[in-house]
Length: 102
Image (cartoon, rainbow, N blue to C red):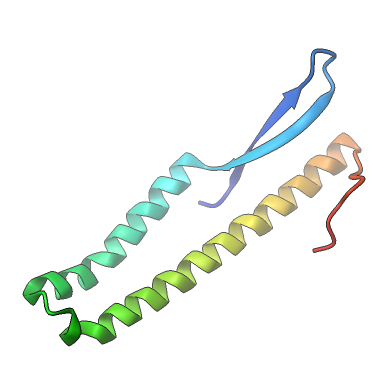
């Protein structure tokens, strides 16, 4: 679901000048569908009587869960991206001059 898609940009001489990435579109759709399906119970509780003060625990719970879910999703994507980039550099036998120590 979080597998990155890489795009390679070459100059007119066929030399690699840039590697960019984006999230897998199918994974992105699945991710949004999961978030929407998970949000339905909380939205139902709020819209049912529309007194957010009465449902503050559910609202806080939803915010915490979605925040943790988004944070973990972001970390997984960045980790997968870094693993794939390392493999690409190894295959292309490239070294980064300004590689970040992270």
